[in-house]
Image (cartoon, rainbow, N blue to C red):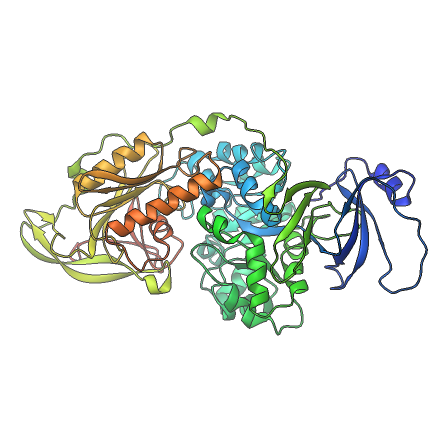
Length: 596
C-alpha cells in the first residue's frame, strides 16, 4: 500500500521552489530515521506531504535561498520526529469508536495505527469491518485496516456472529485502506496445513499482501513451520527469548505493551545488544481507555524502551518507519521528500511527550490537547442491539449433576493470576446437592457460563476457581473473540439479573451483588464500544473495577481482560466457549464431571 499525494506535480514544483509551500517548519532538530542522525533543518510541506528539507548536516556551506511558505511554524530548537505508527491494535478493546479513539491518542503523537477489527468482525461480519473503515475516514490520523483472518478464531470450538473465508477477505481487500491480512491466530492450523489456513494465506500472499502473525508460545520446528506458512510478524513474544527466536529467523516482533501484557522491558533488554533493530516495532494490542488516559499511547511504549536502555533515536525508528515497512506501507514513518507530513515536535526525546502534532501537514494537537474538531456522524450499526439471547431462566444457569447428593471428581478451570491471563485445568472434588453442583461452601469457587448471543441456543458451563470475586455476578459481551456473553457468578439469581441488564444495555459490562446492579459499562456499539469520549468510558471502567473490589476482588490487576479472554480458544490452557470447556493443547472438549 502506498500513501499518495493528491498532485505529485505540485509537490515537485514546491520542492523546486517554483511555488511556495503550504507550511514551513523552522528551527527544528530533525531526527532522521534512515541514518540515526539529528541535525538542524527546515521542512517544507505541500498538500500534506514533505516537499523539501533544507539542511546542511555535513557543513558544506551549500547556499540555498530560504524556503517560501504560506505559513510558518517555529519549532524553537525542539526535536522534529515522524509521527508514531502502532503496528498492531484492536481499537474495539479501547471501548471507544474510531472517532473518539482518534481524539484520545492523537495528542500523544500516534498518527497511524494498523488495526485488526476482528472483534466487531466476529459480531457483525463484513458489515462490522466496513463500519470501522467508513467511520475512520476524514480523521486527524490514519487508521489502516487489516482484514480479519480468523473469524471465528477456532472453527468448530465456538459459535460467533460470522465466518470469514476467501470470499469475505477478498471483499474487504477492495476497500481503500485495507492493507493486508490480520493476525493469523490459528497457528495450529498453519502448522498442520489446515485447508482453511492454506487457502486464506495463499490468497493473501498471491496478492502480495502483508500477513500479520500471532504465534503464542511456539518455537523450534513449530515456529519454522508457521513462518513457512506465510505470517510475517508476531506480537505474542511474551519475553526476551521469544523475541530473539523470532528476530533470528526473520519474523518481525511487534513488541507489545498492552493493558494485560507488559512485554517491552523484557524484549528490549534481550535485543538491545543486537546489531540491527530493523525487525522490531511497537504495538498496543488490547489497551483499555483508562490506561491510555493515564499513561499515553505509542509514546508511552517508546519512553519505556528508552528507560530500559534503548537509544531514543532507535526507539523512534522502531515506533515509526519500522512499523510502516513491516506492513508494506509506503511514504509514511519518516521525514523525507515525498513522505506524508505526519510530524511530532518534542522538547525531550527521553520523555516522548509531543508539544505539537502535525498530520498531513496540519497542526492537529498541541500541548496534549486536540486543535481540531472531529465531526460527529451517525451510523446504523451504532444503534443496533446485537445481544440476541432468547429466554434464559435460573434453571439454565445451574449445573445438573449425574448424582443426587455427595461429592464428584470434577474438571474445573483455575485462573493463574501470577502468570497473567493463563488458565489451567484442575481436578477437584465438588459437592453435589439435590442433583446440582453446590459451591456455596467455598467462596473461591464460582460458576461460569458462556452464552451464544447470536440466536443459537448454545451455552457452555464450567466451575472456576480464583477469578477473584467472593460474591455476586459479573457479565459481559466483551468475550474474545466471538464476543458471546460470559458470566462468572455465585448464584443463578445474581447471574440472571446481570444478563437481563446486559441485554437492556445492548452490551457492555454489568456487576450484580445481592440481586442489585452494582456497576455497569454501557458498550452499545456491537456490545464492544461506547460512542463517548475517553474521559467518560475511562471513568466508567475505573468505577466498575472499584465495584469488583466491593465484591471481594483483590490483587487482580486486569480483572476485565481476564474474564474477557476466558472464552478465547487460542490462548493456553483451559478455556470455555458456548460449546463447553476446551483443552487448548489437545484441542479437545473437556467434561465437567470426570466420569462422563
